[in-house]
Length: 190
Image (cartoon, rainbow, N blue to C red; front, top):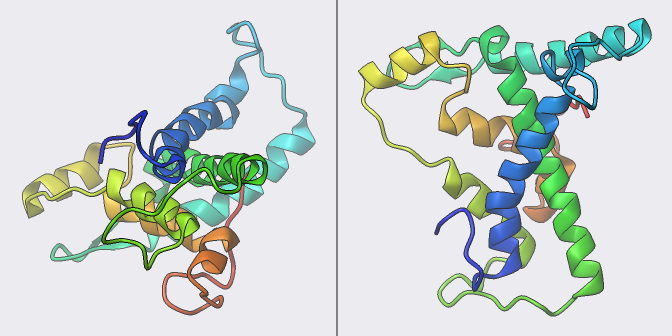
């Protein structure tokens, strides 16, 4: 499934390209984006109080991602290095989901279930496609190089981090906080 297909059910498109668009918009409100005004001029526009609250909230994300261990390598991800992308992933998923919910309120029967996947609700399929777009297979050496140098987390963390922080995911799959992928203390920046 691509990020977008005009003929695909909306739940797939919102979970795919919708999350990517939300991710990119969220960069306007991270440590880099906050330094530029609406015209692209480097003019910090956040109050000291906003910066303080942002730092407090992003620390939760940094700590969470720094505790992710890469299978087979026994090394941890670097939440400081990936924080802007991790915040954007968390925010992008959330905003795409809210946009999809808004769509379904005005178009309640717009999407049909896919053959062979009818046991999953449209909301579950939104999250399944979100995970699908981050699916990747890589060698241990490549995974190590990515962890050491990339400002994006590995795909599994780009899925497990945001979904574990989002009550919408919990509701879709009937998870209780602390069960499976659901965190008790959810990290939310935006």
